[in-house]
Figure (cartoon, rainbow, N blue to C red):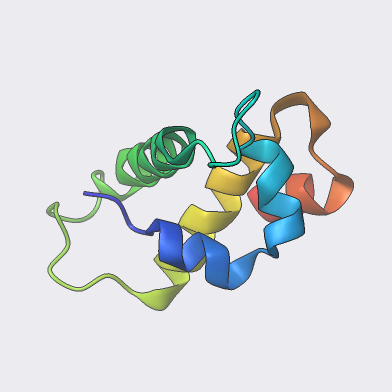
Length: 91
């Protein structure tokens, strides 16, 4: 279960930041699979920490987990191009 959705990401990050990270050569459509993969990976990382203390899946997803999931997924999407701000949010 992902803690955040594509809609959550688009609400938190401007389109001009996401567009180049999701660009598909010779296509106007963004690579939503790449975005969903980043969200899934971020959720898995969060689960690895939560599972030591909580029974998963959580019944209610706190807003702070959505926020952190988006920040981690954005960092993953940035790959080697992550800004200092993206790195700080990831930490």
